[in-house]
Length: 338
Image 1 (cartoon, rainbow, N blue to C red):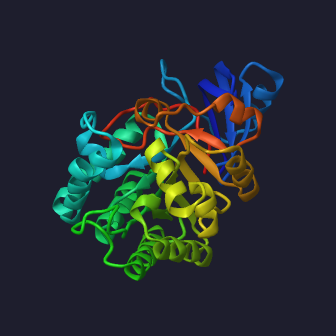
Image 2: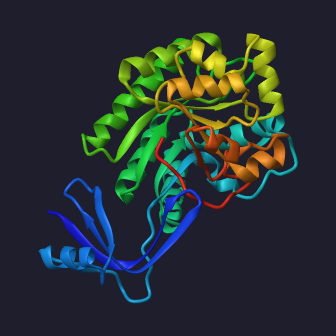
């Protein structure tokens, strides 16, 4: 049934404005869509209250906030929160992160971490998250289960990676075909868990181009088209990753990802610090967007994303907490859906 809520409210109706409504009336329809936000003492607010079958009043001293959306969470890096600041990205992955992520194949280790992660994000107001899980199918499914159990809306991606130079032998897909097949099984498993509720969904997740062969990237693009899922991956994250794409493909990450069918409407590109003007036009054309991680970008990417210019030019972008949850943390901010 429709919901009417009365509460003190903080919201950001525009990117440059914070609005405080001390006594707001919020009308919500059966699908959870907010129909109106009015001051209780205004004629419109009084009409909403008069027409409501019941009113939920927030506790005294509380403030109602919109749920935050975090577009980039490396879930298995939660245990290394705030550590690993001594190495550049390409070494940090091999020496710290890949060994930690491999441990999540043990579900007795994975499940408590997932529960703590999801609970922690919810406690800080993150009601929707876009997750990188791990290579392991069962661990990825367990993360989706944790989000469902806690009532968090989530996009959960099994991380696909198979490049023999970009990944360790003991933590990668055995082949491109196996990586695509495992990602397809993950899509099916998460879809079965959600059972049409629309709370948790799969998302095709190649880690980034240095970790994926051409065959895997192409297969994942075909899988995303076939399954109709969203896509997430890193793009031009650092000068090292940007240079890798130029040397390997003879073009930027964005252009290469597009050629593999991975730039789709709703694709989330993480960081994208070194995107070019041509990349910008391509992203707008495809309806893809950028998840911007301010502290992470400034710390190691040798670039600062010109967000004000992107907003003025109509790019689709949003804040994200950080790329490496265990490496750096940025505060949650205003976000949009992928």
